[in-house]
Image (cartoon, rainbow, N blue to C red; front, side):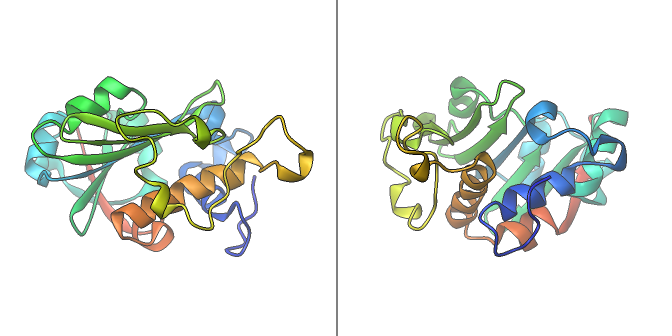
Length: 207
């Protein structure tokens, strides 16, 4: 497992990994398990609950560290509101079309996903348009209507920019994923660790 020192480059990835995993999964990593989250602005909780097929009457306090067991048991999702943004875990954030559909009608959303194939993506969409999307290892290969739309939020972040270059320029995957999470925190205006990953929010069961 990556370094849980808050000063380490891969801290947010390590925190996410240690938060998601239960005791019986400590030999795995997030890439093997798969992970997807989406942050949405422009819709209220009742609307999103309906669209994700969740029952507001089942609302219970929940930490992100508890949602994996609940999701496997009954399909619950973790729903966390901070300011104008609502985060849903797990959520469909691993497809361009899904992000376009989710943001139709003036919404804004950013999704983060990891899969077993080692592909870690950030996708940002607004008003039914995919603004930018990139694999954490290759942000220079970003695509979308405005591939550089989030560049102003990337100051000081380290992604894998030149995988074929000198080893001195390489960035470990935990650092690039941690940078992606920092980027999302900057976009949502929230502290990724204390307000999203460690805070108690809500779980909702399917309707």
